[in-house]
Image 1 (cartoon, rainbow, N blue to C red):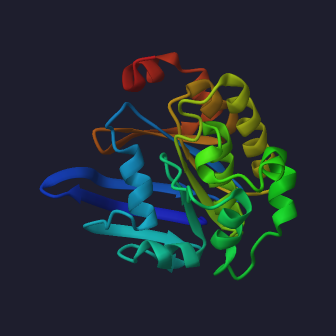
Image 2 (image 1 turned 90 degrees about the horizontal axis):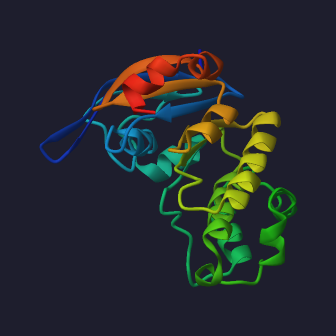
Length: 232
């Protein structure tokens, strides 16, 4: 059994049907990317896995436990963490308070020093409030808040969006380090080069339907697939 198995996932926003029988799998220690045009259903997929959006039907099994229909806090306790596109850090708390608060209910939390080793900039800024951080620092903190809970799987929604190239490179290095250490990751990202450099396998979603599955290496060699589904 795969670490994460998703089958027949359907999600709606009101009367609008957004996801249509989405199915995917993620193996332990694997980095899987979900690609697609704007509005294709990428973020809705992550939110449906996490319980932020309640699927109308389908199955989400993490490490043998069915999570579909559970609230997001219960999904988090089961070992899944979503780093939202908008980051959602506590603006009035400093870096260290954000991290400590995120780890309070974690059964096997990372020590703070492990987060600071991965993101030395956060250690330098440990006393700074969320509102005083740059976009890149906020993204590091958002990822650190997820990791401190020692999750089985991390969902990253557009982690590189709007960031300077040097910050993207730093975050990519951190993601590579995580992957090398065995962290399982699902990545949604518009930066195609960064995504294909990090991912082992790729799913492409279009209008709420999974239209392609394959290795990142094969996709790099298939520009016609990228052109057809992503227009690049």
